[in-house]
Image (cartoon, rainbow, N blue to C red):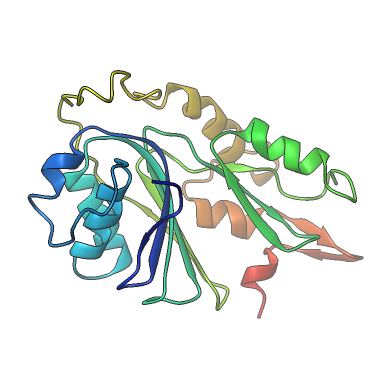
Amino acid sequence: NNHPIIHKPSGTALIHNGIVGNDDDVYKKVTTSRTGEVDSEAILGVLIHAKGSLPNRIQAVGDIIRGSYACAMISAQIPGVLAIFRHSSPCVFWWDAVKEILWFASTEEIIDIVRSEDSVGPLPWLPPPVELPNNGWIIFEANGQVKDGSFKANDSPVIYHSRQKTPPAYSGCSQSSENEKRLFSREELGEPIRTISDSIQTIPICIGDKRKTQLPWQQE
């Protein structure tokens, strides 16, 4: 029941922040079997059961899963790919261009701890943390491509099991809206940024003595 949750036959691993309210019902709809008790395993079950592209599988999660979730997944079936998606639970990520590490966490405050404890200290020219919009997904590929999009989530009322007495901590995105406005509408860019990919590609960063407009994973 510890994270990451792993589906060994497919080599797929998932971490999940949030709560699933219909996990028992999910296993009546998918072909995978439950191996633990944690509700997060239901999300992995949907991703394995669904067909098609990774965005299609994420949409299947939105169609079937009820509750809140911020998830990251990798799979041996699609090596070199990291997918992050969320509904109602927050998710913030930050690219450390000095160490070439992608950090992600539930809040910007946690990312700030990482930045403050960095051996070289926080550098003002590094891009700020970016919050994933509610019902959004982003896919990082080893070949340097970054794709993002959105999905529709199932907002049907949730009847929580007796072991889940507390409803999701984040039932909406009022908190994230303020952050999104701050991160995606930077004055120096002249106009609001509509997608994460746009914000990544247009935020100027400085590496060494060279000025670049793309992050290292997008360089040829």
